[in-house]
Amino acid sequence: MLNLSLLSLLKKNRALLLYYHSCVILFMENSTQQVELQIPESSRQISEDNDTNTNQQQQISRKSNKHYGWWFRIFLYIIFLLVGQCAATLLGRFYYDEGGNSKWMATFVQSSGFPVLLPLFFLFKSSKNTAFSSPEKPSGFSLFLIYLFFGLMLAGDNLMYSYGLLYLPVSTYSLICASQLAFNCLFSLLLNAQKFTALILNSVVIVTISAALLAVHSEPDTSTKLSAGKYAIGFVCTVAASATYALYLSLLELTFKRVIKSETFNTILKMQVYPSFIASCACVVGLYASGEIRHLTAEMNGFNKGEISYLMTLIWTAVLWQICCIGLLGLIFEVSSLFSNVISTLGLPALPVLAVIFFNDKMDGEKIIALLLAVWGFLSYVYQNYLDDSKAKSSKPEENEATITH
Picture 1 (cartoon, rainbow, N blue to C red):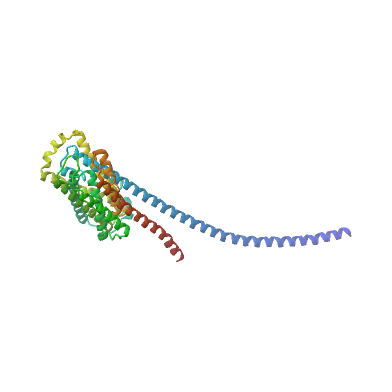
Picture 2 (cartoon, one colour):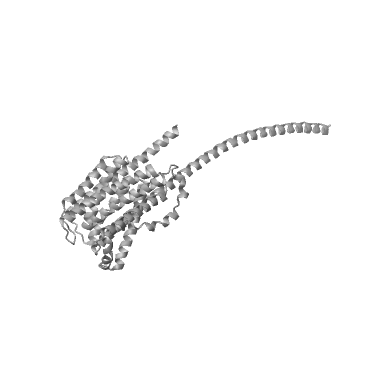
């Protein structure tokens, strides 16, 4: 009897245990299903958040890379412009001081160095950058007229600069060239819709006073005494060349934005090579028409430093002017003509100091005052650019917040 009772209890308990075990299994299955349903939803949200974060980080990295690349190009163009301008101007003065006298040859070397840029056409082909080009391209005849106009304008401007460099010392010449900033501000206002501020107006006035101070100080101070008439011719030609150069820059910016509408380095090369070719052809015509072509052999033989030095002076002057022009056009293309002219003006205060060192030019009181005024005007414009840049940076977060709220 005891054995039968024990067996009945075990059977009943076993049934209870089986029932309890089945209930636990059902409960566990339901809970695991709920957990499985909740986990994918949370994981989806986390994955979506990770995707958005990675996309934002990629966009930020791309923008930062583009920003750093833009600043690298700007820095490179500034180096090209400053080094090319200062070195080419000093070599031009060296050409005249050592026996060179041909104005058309001095004009020719300012534009004839364009063949050194031809290999760059194969490195920067337009087919690789067609995504940034405008579908509305100007016709071939329109481009020919543009290149012809800028080439002839460049030849005339270089000729006036050659007369100014012949009849003026480098220090006076470089400080008068600072007036091109004032002319460029005027043309930028009329042609490029440049906004005037108090600092820009202050820069224009101060630089103009700096050039006018040198006009009052009209006594020639070169080592070879010149007449007051030749000094006046040099002064007038340099001021006229500065005005023409400023108009040239503003028209280039207008052409880039309104006519060509192409954002490639190939475009910069074309705007340098083709007008330079036309300017060189015009200079060759001027050499034959003026008769200076017949005196070039005697000029080379009578050069104080020798024939090899004569040829190297002309060759390196031509190469340096092309390097300068690439930097100039690059700054116009990336920023504006006014900014490129400001950077060009930055090299002018250094030229009188270099002229005193290499050519024994006199640095008297008037030139020192004019130099300080030119630096003052340049710093005023640089500070205005700093204010504009900081204002643009502060406005970007507000625009981003507005887009997020909408």
